[in-house]
Length: 98
Image 1 (cartoon, rainbow, N blue to C red):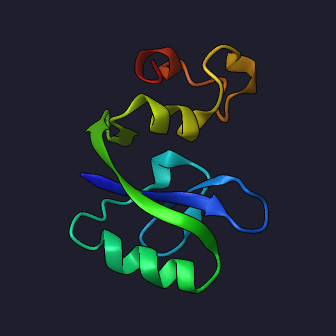
Image 2: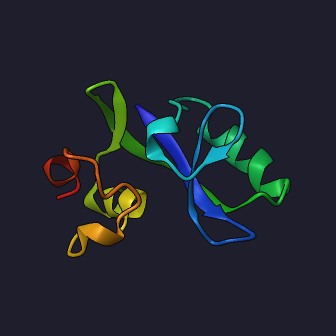
């Protein structure tokens, strides 16, 4: 499974391709395997996202989870301050961020 991520040009927020638009929630991300380059070029040209790139991921409990620690941190935020993460109430956060 591959996910497409980048940063929103207006806000700088980390974003994930949903299949039709961008979301700040990795849970909304769609599998782009085989289409990642085409989508990345089109979306960067539309100036909605900066430097989109594909990352490896896996489905866990029905939600996509980036495979690499760097992307997991980008998906949720700091690992040392759970109160500053995107979804601090997520009881599974400690199980997959680190």
